[in-house]
Length: 76
Image (cartoon, rainbow, N blue to C red; front, side, top):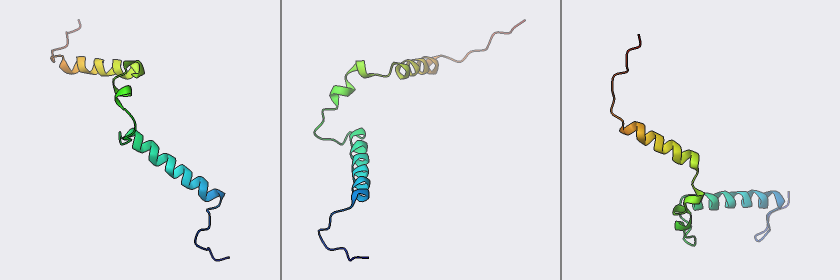
């Protein structure tokens, strides 16, 4: 195989792999709130973007967590 010289450009497969790695890293960084150039409050404080299924489920879980345990009625 030919010897790789300094400054050789990566081939198409290497570029695709590097691009995928970069995209994954940047996506994860954004999700972790580490993107200093982005104002996360635009998303955090916008209730129009809330997943209503999750909000409803959370409210239901809070309701049942706060309910006092009691005896189940006896069925005759």
